[in-house]
Length: 445
Image (cartoon, rainbow, N blue to C red; front, side, top):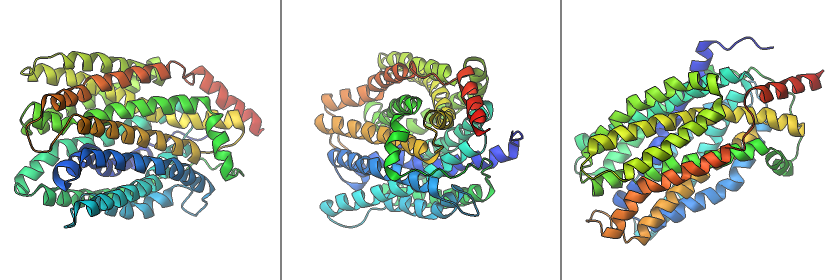
């Protein structure tokens, strides 16, 4: 039986989400807008790029999980990837926000190469980083605390900095050139992210040392498809990611073209900060009382209601719009904290079900589900804009206005409903999980 995790150990690990998310949030919130309105390629090209990248991830992510499971070094199985992958990951971030002086055709090629390479390196760092949580502790409450603190650094700190700070940074220092502004900001975030991730890789500890499992590359499919809880949670994660990506990929379009004021964007997300803090702060208490799965469902239900209310508000009701959005943002924190706290539990379930202990493959599957949600959600948004006749930096036609409004409100509500349906079938909270751990201990003896 391992001693309880020290608070400093949890902090030293969880701060990695600040480093990861400075990189990830800039890509997630601004790359689609950057590609269409700054880089100069069409929404259709962006949609194709996102889909191509995720098609490659269907192969890349499981293989990376397999490699991570087989890794054995003096630093551990997962930490070396965080330490030595930090700088390459952030160099690719800078490359994604660079505008070369070349033809549109070559720009499309450049975007494909840099974005796909970024995704590959992100997997090589993010997957092992997330896997560390499964070898730090098997205690559900400690895992819930780790997940909550990770969301604090990911959302309260990193996402707030990116959302609240990006637009003022561009307007203040690069009012004449968004291209130069995005490049400078990517470089700044890359430096900070690299330092944080290297620190985390050095300071984190892998406390659970399991005997290496001897399984073949083709066993990946058995590990995944025999783990029912993994598939269910992966489905919920996919839809939950779609909510975030679809809404946020059109958020800047919404403020620029529907509300007609991009300055409101930073103000709006400034209000989301205290809402996110409330969500993260309440999650540990709620999960202790009701379980992670039930709190995840509660958060998804609130998101459905809030998005429907927001959709039918009059255009000049910005204060009410913001208040309802704060409620939705709090609820999304319930969902995000719970989903990442539930992921390590599926590792134990898979071990119990198949007899094969693998952290890398389950986390690779969740990495793919997460990135598939990003890709399909983002591609769907861009394709809808393309079909609506969207033209960058001009007044929107009626079809494009309707598309932006529906993408911001109604489609995410539908994804939340799908998330709830998936979670109804998830049965890995409380007593059942404790029994699985007890069974695994008995097998060892």
